[in-house]
Length: 84
Picture 1 (tube, rainbow, N blue to C red):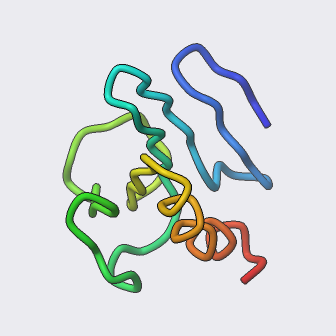
Picture 2 (spheres, helix red, strand yellow):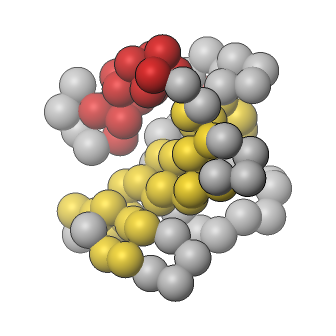
């Protein structure tokens, strides 16, 4: 885990995920190094970040706003870390 100025990065030789806390919006944004083509992109939950300017890591954005979202995001996070 690396705590940087704007975000926290989790890595295994390369960054696998980036967490961005947005308390004013009531969400945690997780950027994962997963190919968005391999994931069913769901409006308001996941977003394809290819071609959109953002801070480095990950082509897939996962928006966590509730406990249910966290449960739904767990398989994607595990896949990004190679444990699924």
